[in-house]
Image 1 (cartoon, helix red, strand yellow):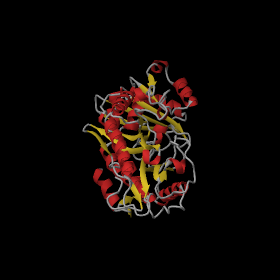
Image 2 (tube, helix red, strand yellow):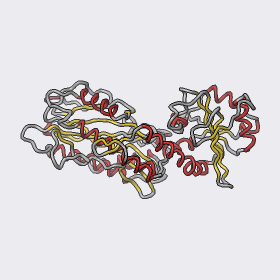
Image 3 (spheres, rainbow, N blue to C red):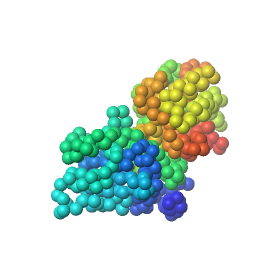
Image 4 (tube, rainbow, N blue to C red):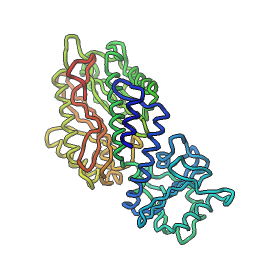
Length: 445
């Protein structure tokens, strides 16, 4: 499978040094990744979380977010009422993948309902349960993890009304299983992820270049919409609208430190500005989330001012402190507390608000701070760190700039992977400022 993905990238249409697959080849990759996840990953996750049956129930245009990640590549939505049943027989090391639907759920999940023999879809579901006699039945409901709360009230109540009383006590929230499915990445997916983040970096580099930005003319909003148009032209999607903002001297901007909800729009970009973007794309059912910085050179400047280069180093130091505190089984709140404490002891002024990244942009897994919850996040922050998971390493540090008579924020975000060999960035991180115009030696990553 890994070689198939690489081959498809090599035969696709190139964008800069990267490859974007046409839709037909994307579908082949998606379905093969799903096959690997169903047959290799899912049995292990069901064993680890203690479920031998997992039932997902959705209706067209109202999909369970977990089920949506399982849709065949040619299915853009569920059809009618779609019911999927996974049954794990650990003793025989088998997993059944059944669709209580009129047709196969793609090539990976076969139809197990003949409507002519049993017109009632719910009764057929109960037959499947009684034939297999599961010990623990998982349904996707959860108070705190939104992606894992996919079963709607009517389907939940109808299911329980059909279910024999002897099985009702076996029905449990599949929260841990659903989180595990959403957050865990395979080796094949990580090959794809590297390509995905590289595409993201290259779009940002082009957006923060003289090809897009004409100082004194181009606005931050112009760059935001250029990024949207660029993604669309590549046949990709963004999962949120990009943002671009400016930091400059107190005399020019006012002694103002941007919060997260008050970035001015349509600011004209000028020489001497420190630009910041927040940008992410969706491709092959994975998502990126990236924040990088660029400096607009003044006439006769050949590199960014040393005080801004040093400020970026402070941001990189916070990143290093933070990711060095990652440890399997440690909660997000523990990682947050240790990282903030260490960074502050070094004289830094950090804020950390890192989230799981993968099947969704703001995905399921441990939450490590929020911008307005630096003391920890109840429940979601108490969830432990697991291996083979990806995070948007999102944070900032506040730096005083005497030359600008103000504080600035160095805001950074990069995709990072946690596995058995420790932490690594999926496709590098920014260690030098991008420049407009581009200067050799300041490539940004």
